[in-house]
Image (cartoon, rainbow, N blue to C red; front, side, top):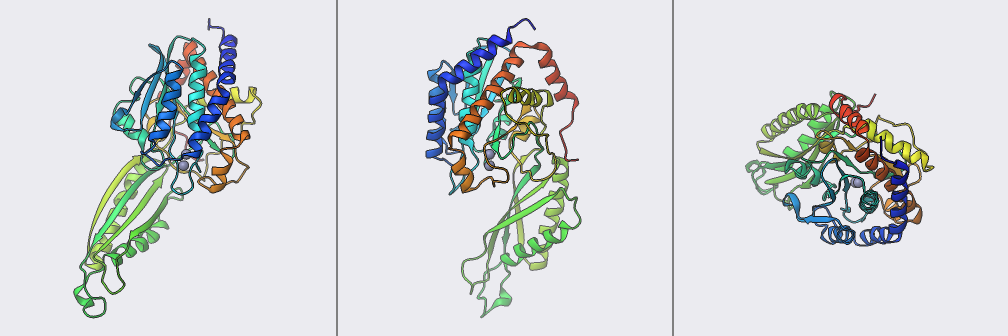
Amino acid sequence: MSVDMTAAYRAIDGALAAHRDELTALSLDLHAHPELAMAEHRSAGLLTDMLRRNGFRVECGIAGLPTAFRAEYGTGTPRVAFLCEYDALPEIGHGCGHNLIAAGGVGAALALAGTGLAGTVCVIGTPGEEGAGGKILELDRGVFDDVDAALMFHPGDRTLPIRHATAAQKLVVEYHGVAAHAAGSPADGRSALAGLIQLFVAVDAMRQFVPETVRLHGIITHGGTAANVVPEYARGEFQVRDLTRESVGELVSRFRAAAQGTAAATGTTVEITPGLLYAERKNNHPLAFRVADHLRTAGIDVETPVLRGGTGSSDIGNVSLALPTIHPYLAVLPRGTATHSREMTRLVATPEAHEATWTMAGALARTGADLLADAEFRDAVRDDFVQCPPDYPA
Ligand SMILES: [Zn+2]
Ligand SMILES: [Zn+2]
């Protein structure tokens, strides 16, 4: 490698120090004005304003998503992208800490741009992580086509370079029956709610005969309008999760058969509308372990990856199957703190959480510099992507 990485790393630290106060203010502003999935207009505006002020070319509303954006600095290849999530949760605000992801991603990009290394530094604004699958839509619409690697991190209660995440399929289930007086003429009615309740019973029966890695869960969002009317309409939402998309596909077939069965049993009809399919996560090992090395050098404890249990799903999975991608975790919470909690909302606005985030931004920017400057490292990253399957729990 002919490039002086010491100088590049020094430039990264200098840029992060210079922007630290502004980045902290950005994170706290996002935190104080939480916006829900796909409605992050103000947040996207704050992020793109800061990028524009620092010389990035910005395109807003990409992929047909008003709150998505892509910003670029430099030209040509390689192209390294930092991903920003900035949606919040209903009622509890930034209980998933996406304010830190967004400000950290912008910080990493500004820092890498400051090295002057050849190539393009991208920031991709990925809205609607919480259920709306912004990255999946962006991926399908070509936003990642020319990107060589996608880097982001997620705050949590431990620092881990890699972690598995399950594939997941959301399903909206609607039963249609016949309304009738529930006491006067119940024999004329057919209860859509009964069909839906029996589906929950059928899913519970299925649970014993699926691999232990499977998660099947749902809610009733509409169960009728009056106790004295046989419900003619009932609606539920389910999620089917397992290690791979293939396994989820088979489970969805069984789920559909069960839904048809309970419709037949209750004299109703059923409609199933699938949502986006979230793919399992494929962590790029050379990238993830390079970030871990940089974090250790900066004095952060990095734990041995735990691959089993306790994982959800994210739209980063789909991106990770298309190009080299990392999604390491950064400890900003005491061990055992629940995510998506009011406690997490409080803790992702502390000085300590921001301090850790800037260290992570430095590690991500250093890894980006390694990618831009080191062709051998790029080859290792590419080889791992082509040759290695996703990490599955042991
Ligand atoms: Zn999150
Ligand atoms: Zn979340």
